Image (cartoon, rainbow, N blue to C red; front, side):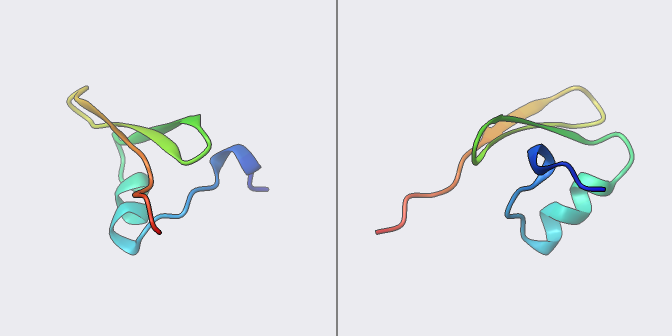
Length: 51
């Protein structure tokens, strides 16, 4: 069963990356995701403003 805390609007590329061994994501805030790579490097992403 999918936990609502694990839901994110990801493109196909990022969804596959999320499923790749060694990668993990943490939801910091709704729409804000911390990506952690196999080497330990990390990046925070947020949705782009759309008006």
